[in-house]
Length: 536
Image (cartoon, rainbow, N blue to C red; front, top):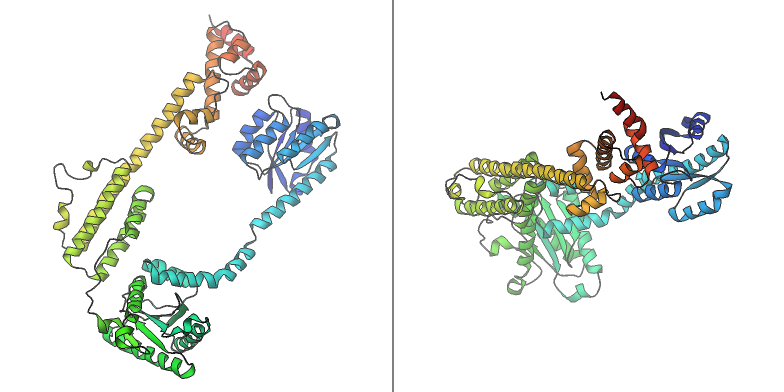
C-alpha cells in the first residue's frame, strides 16, 4: 500500500476526491491533506509519502514550486499535477521538474483512478527492480570464481584475522580445517613457463587431483606459480610429524608431474603456521625456499625449515591492529572495543612471546590509544593518576589478563570522555543556533541553510542533532518562536497586522495570518480583541 498526500486549496475538492475514490482498491492510502504548498512541505517532510497529488494554483506556494521542492528533497517521490485547460501551457513547464502525470480539471473519479493506476504500475516496477534479489544472487554466483581467487591471493599476501579468514573461506565454499596449516609453492624450473600458460595449468591439474583425493587442502594459481594450502585438524601429533607427512606428499606430487608431463618443477615448503591467519608467513617462507635452487639444484622439494633455523615469530603490533584500535575508540561501542581487545590478546597467547616482546607490544598499543585520545580532544592526563609515569604499569605485568584489563579500562575511560564531549558539543551547537535564531527571527530569508552556514556545519548533521536535543525540527522551532513573539506584539503594541508580520519575518501578511491561525487557533485580530477584552 502506497502513501499519498493530497494538496488543494479548495476544501470541497479535497473532501470530494477523498470520498469518491476507493483508495485501498487503487493500492493507496491518503496519509494526509494540505490546503497550500507551504503547509504541504511540512506534511511531506513528516509523513514521507510515495505520491503527492497537488493542484497547480495555490496561495503561498503553487503546485510547480511544491513539485520542485519535492523532487529536490526526494527524487523517488511521484507527483501528479491537477490543472485546468487554461493552465495547461503553464503546466508544461513542469516537464523540466520530472512531473509524473497530469489530470485536467474538471475531472471525474474514473479519470483520476486511471492516472493513479498508471503511476502505481511504474512504482510497482521500480519496487520489483529493487527487490530483484535473484538477479543479484546470479551476478554474485557468476563472480564467485573471481572472488574466490582474489580471497586466496589476499590470504597468502596479507595479514587477515583468523575469524575473518575462516568466515570468508566458508562464504566462498573453501574447505579448510581449523588447526595448523602449511603453504607450498610449485614453480616451473625452466623457460617453458614464459611460452604460454598451458604448462602451469597442467601442473595445477595434477596437483589438484592429488590434493582432492586426499582432501588435503586447496590449490590455486598465483604469481606464475601453483600454490598449495595444506590445513590440518587440531591434533596431538607434533609439528615434526605433520611436516614430514606434508613433505612426503609433495614429493609424490612432484614425481607425478615429472611422470605425466615433460616439465621439471621445484616445490618450496614454508614453516608450519599455527592457524589460517598466519598462512602468509608460511607462504613467504615457501617462496624464499625456492631461492635455494641456485645452491641445491632444481627438480626437488625444498623445505625452508631444513635450511634456516628461524626463531619463533616475534610478536608485532601491526598496522591492522593500530587501525582497529583507533576505530574502536572513536567510532565503536564499549562492547565492540572489549571484544576486539579480547581477540587481540587471544592471538598474543597463541604466540607465546617473550616478556620483552610483550612489553614492546603493549607500549606500541598504548601509544596508539594515547594518540587516538588526543586527536579526539580528550585530556590524557585525566586517564592516569597525577604525576604517575604514563607507561609504568607495562613493566609490572606478568600475566596477560592484568594487561588486558588495564587496556580495556583505559579505552573505556577515553570512550566515555569522548561520548560526554560529543553530548556537550551537541548542546552548545543547539544553543548557538537558538541564539542566532532569536537575533535574526525578523529576517524573512532566515532558514536552516542560513543557520548551518553561520555554524559551518551540514544541514543533515544539524537537523539530526537539533531534533534529538529539542524533540522538534528547526522549522517547527522557528515557527513557534515567531508566533510567540507575534502574540507578545499583539498584546503589548498597537501595531497593524502587516507591521507585526514584517517584524517577525513574514513579508506576506496573508501568509502570516494563515500561519498564526494555524498555530494559535484564531486570527491575529481575534487574538488581540480577546486578550485586550480580558484586561481590566
